[in-house]
Amino acid sequence: MTRRRALELVLVVVSTITTGTRWFAGGLWAGSPATGTAPTATSGGPPISGAELGALVAFAEVLVDARLLSNDTRRELTDHLIDSARGDAEQRALYVATARLLDRLAGRSFAALTVAERVALVDRQRLNVRPLTADESAGAIPDETRDVRTRVVPDLISACWRSPGGWDAVGYAAFPGRCGDLARYTRPEPDGR
Image 1 (tube, rainbow, N blue to C red):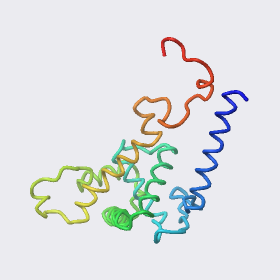
Image 2: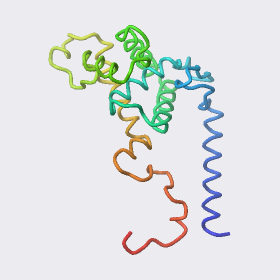
Image 3: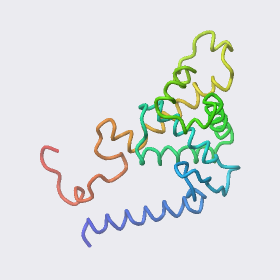
Image 4: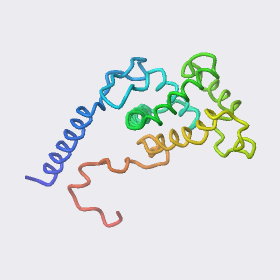
């Protein structure tokens, strides 16, 4: 057996184990926020609804680059939100409160706004400003707004930049931990590396 074939088999086994583990843990979802269908829950309390996920992803788009996220980044962010909400009831409550705040401030579905309208709303409400002023720290803003700015915003930004799309945006050819070129590992590296 060649090294290449052995590596391919190892990757297949790891992929199968990972997919199987997520399947049995309830990590695979029947729906997605893009289609508007609600995912089904299997553990960890009620899931975040499709509309709430849509609002959070739309909010992340404004925070990260004021444009639509790539499919890879959207998928990674959605997985992060679902996993975090399932594993932590307090985090789930923060996500739900954030989605409701965004929809209330928009006067309709925040995700249905154009990117420009979302950017204007977030700027106007200062939801993208992380450091709190002395007045804001002393209670001049509602707790839900403070939580969005200090807890949800950093979480969304971090999740986006940890995704393959985030790494690609800064010029990396392959996301760390993922094989960029399987054939590269079957031959010696050139002297220049």
